Length: 181
Image 1 (cartoon, one colour):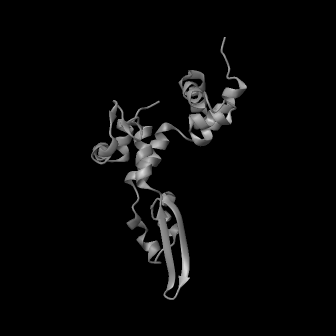
Image 2: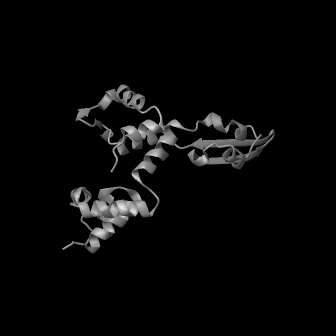
Image 3: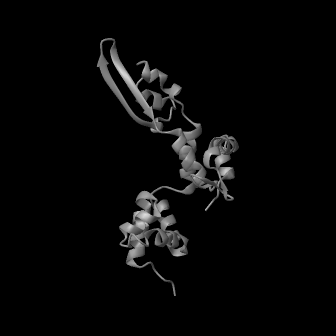
């Protein structure tokens, strides 16, 4: 007989799909603060909950491959110099997008009138943060201080992260080196 998820597990899946944090999902599902971290981790190990999360991701149009691709674009794709025509006022963001520049990397932008005409400010999403998420999604890093395999990187994070970065030269390499679930 197939066991279905209980109401609390369903709530856990729904909350996990909102913020991808098992402890927070457990808290939002009604588990106590004292047990939320353990329950959250345990729930992620349960096949039925994993299947429900996967179905939720698929229904939303997300998949592990899509997440890797989008993070890969942020890390290896568009650079601020691609936006020079907008910054100097010769093109609109819509024109850049039509020219093939991926504008999803923009976190915020503004135009402010000044004495010389228009001042333009552009802020991109953090490549470092995208890289950190990418290596986590690819299963290459378990948390900020531990490279998979147990080595504590602590103060020597720079050279170790650079080595991981070197291994991921392009979004095509991401698909080859990433886990497929």
